[in-house]
Amino acid sequence: MAETWTVGRILSWMEGFLGEHGDENPRLSAQWLVSDALGVSRIQLYADLARPLTLEERDVLRAYTKRRAAGEPLQYITGTTDFRFITVDVRPGVLIPRPETEVLVSEALAEVRVVERARQAAEAAAADADAADGPGAFGGAGADEAQKAGAEGAEGPSAVASPEGVAPGEDEAGAAGDAPAFLAVDACTGTGCIACSLAREVPGARVCATDISAEAVDLARHNAEKTGVADRVSVVEGDLLDGVGAPWRGAAQLVISNPPYVPTAVVDGLPAEVRAHEPRLALDGGADGLDLYRRLLDQAEEVLAPEGVLAVELHETCLDEAARLARAAGFEAVRIARDLAGRPRVLVARMPAASDDQTSSETGE
Image (cartoon, rainbow, N blue to C red; front, top):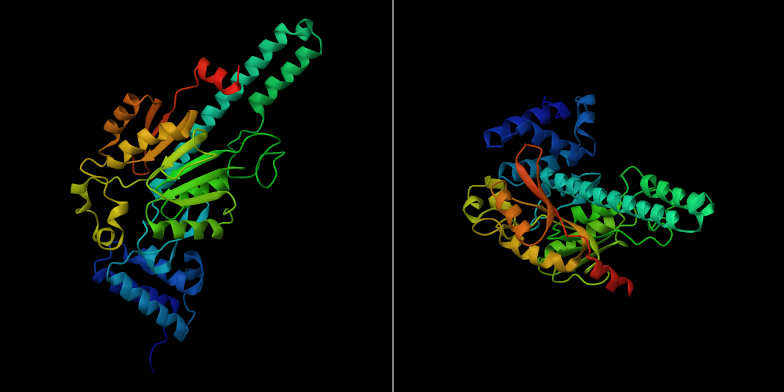
């Protein structure tokens, strides 16, 4: 009598087969594909190893195994991948999100929070100074109001809130009273994973996502719908920041990008499944990996508000030169962050603060 194909048996067979066909981590691949075909977590697989597979499940896994043995990325086979707190769809022709890009988002949001806290502290100090000079300077109501304003500025909810929840007093759109929305631009959006994450994690965020690839634009719009943020993520087809208009242009608190950044000579040495299946357009960053970054630096100055943050993921060999270029372009607080493997990966910088002349011009004084 033929042996029954159970969860445990198919896992063992797929691991061996994929290992023989060059999969660098055949056990993980087998677990990933079987859990997707059965619609359960990888942990649940091992709680039910004796369960027989249906004919439909066996057919799906047979097709999955052939595709994986041919070197196709797991994410393209299953059609989805996790990114931070969301799951996005992926398709051939669009770059697959990597864990390094999660670090990019974390570093960007951390820098924006630093800027926001400094702004709140400055506003609180100004309120204290006004109170000291005003009618309440000798202990009247003006002093009490200034003290309250200072406390709220130092301890109140930031415009960039944590992923755990919406800051108190904010509605579904995220606007607290008359406070402006958090404006961000995601250049070279690909799947839209960065833009969708920002919109999900930051209350009130409005994100403009751009990509030169029509396939990527279509997928990013789909993922914005899938993750429930299509009302706050605008996806436009365009080269870097060319398609960015109002309300972001000149007012964005963040420009973030994972552009093509692999030096041309390095592209051909990437793993076979990357070279053969992922779009070179989304990988090749020119001779030194900084072709698009140089252009992004120039364009970001026209899109970012004073003290706006620029955060870019780059190749580990490029970060020192990228930092030099950012400083030469007038950016401040330039720093380099490392990825999960400890390699230089993310550049973070800020636009200078507004000068007194700029401030007076903007306020009409």
